[in-house]
Image 1 (cartoon, rainbow, N blue to C red):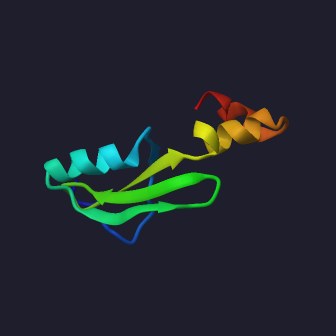
Image 2: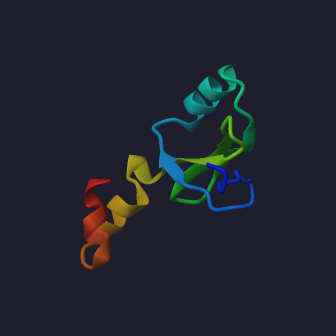
Length: 88
């Protein structure tokens, strides 16, 4: 609507993908800008960011630890609030 203004400086929602490289390649086929190239974030995996047609940033996350997403890893260690994220 008239109230929303896309921004590159606001919060970014990250989506888990199996392969950041494949998503970046496909995004570029549709002329989406790559705002952050694939980079490692330790044992947690890799991240990248692309822009959408409205000027928003979209975060991409590829799991590390042999394909285990961070919330799954925390849930498997037991206890607490993290347990609800085991099915992510």
